[in-house]
Image (tube, rainbow, N blue to C red; front, side):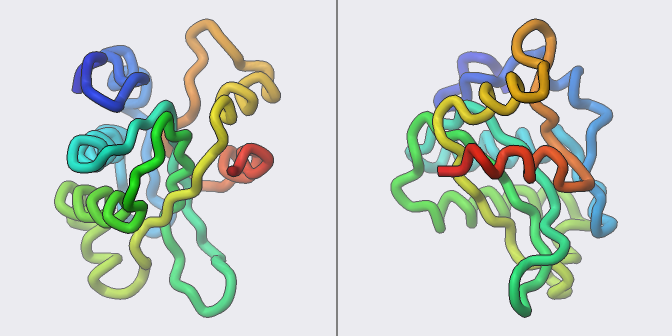
Length: 157
């Protein structure tokens, strides 16, 4: 992954180091930042999407009789022309990298991930709202709770 990757402007060598200890394991899947970064890179490479920023959080109690899922909150520079295809590629890449995640999907414990669009400038607005805009502050890539996701709700498209 490099900073000159098409459609992936936020990727930089510091990102890998900064998020190397972050993980998502709300359901026992042990997803790490490297896996979500790679899955996003694959989805971007295989579609026409361009992504500025994203974060991933579990949705443990979805509406109705739905299974839980990972919600990817994404600020697109350019929305994918086929969101379902984008999501399928993203999910398949994550399953390929993480056997625990695959088992949870295959065993019908989790449903496939879902993406939620965040309006342009939304992540910047969120960071400003928590007093962390600029400097070395980065958006938390993964979380085991919905604190970041819930705060980003005001920036949904």
